Length: 364
Image (cartoon, rainbow, N blue to C red; front, top):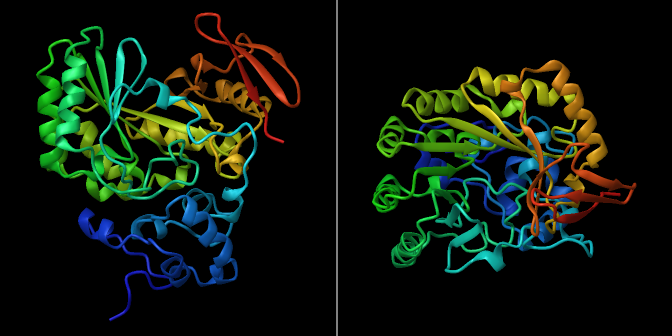
């Protein structure tokens, strides 16, 4: 019997557990699936040793060319360039560590708290801004740690919005998610629960009717996902989105502007139109973070602003996300001419929402 990872095979079994068990986890498995990568195995191995490798068979089957010209290859396959570092890069570019009162709990804003409930993802995206955590040791936040975080939130009634993130919270089973949601819904001051997950993109088999019905019990609950390229809007992913939307779960999308993936107007127009057709509101388009290992993805903000200007001419506001930069000191800053105080070819100076100044080095 041939391997499920054999070259040329595109396997999309509906069982999400099968997909997780058969993820590509090693360079040898990656080369078995894409033989042309054999010549680059050493560089891939160096990157994968530092930042873990995992690709579901489903997502591997979406890659059309096993080289850097394919945007989905670029998103999922480690490259030697990831081990290059710049002095301004950080493993924690948003300064989350300084806003972590308890393990797994991050609070950067007065009315919001974020819970890192899993360190596992179905596929480890190469542009991830939590490369320091995701996949370094796969697992879930211990139940006792989760309950301590819930108790901490209970003592802070100003928190109205709790976000489940990771890793990817939907790599957890339904029962584990149910227990978490029951605990959070018992807090009367928590008005909104959000789930941030890329499983509709890389593991759409995870979105079952049973899961969608369970999530719908905890309204108001929103799910934000991350589609970065229109080729990710496959029949399977669109069916997953339809399952969630038809169960009454509002959907948003947080894309990242990525060099060689979506840094042109036509690609983003197709993506945002496709999302709206599938009842997903384009929410944010993030400028790439200053995280180690992603410099090759960064796009100059001047180009990002030009892309957004053209998109405003082509799209209605319903399909137009906010172009934004997340900074450790000033939080999220919309990238518009009004927030840019000074700009050179090498550096931006930005004004934050309460007047703070934030510097951002431009990519070379």
